[in-house]
Length: 143
Image 1: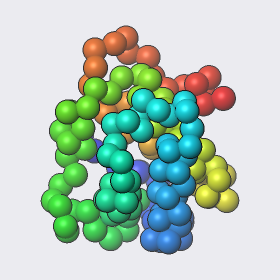
Image 2: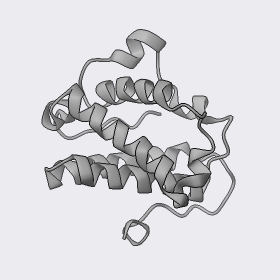
Image 3: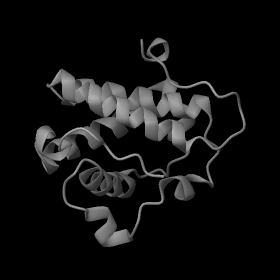
Image 4: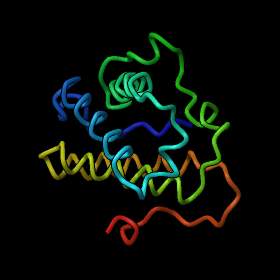
């Protein structure tokens, strides 16, 4: 199940494609820069350009804008596409740490930032595929 954002058109509220590109660029910069993100970074190839472009296309549709990812690649099938990777609490938290930091740096609207962050938490929890306890990403982890 793909957790779509339920409140408003976030694509319009974020300002369209350009801010999404800034968000994705900063997200992957943080993944590259932060030693705490090493676990999630090593799951990606050396060059993040291709995955970054796919992520921009995915986010466009996911936020209520043009369905660029679906037009080019078909249904995202996020969980299925990520099954080859072992994703547990640590990987989820590293991914969300980078995304939360990127959201805070790129998006000026604090309400929109929180809505997107909450939506990303749902998706990230859904992506977990390694047997562990059922803890979820919480405010304590975000702090």
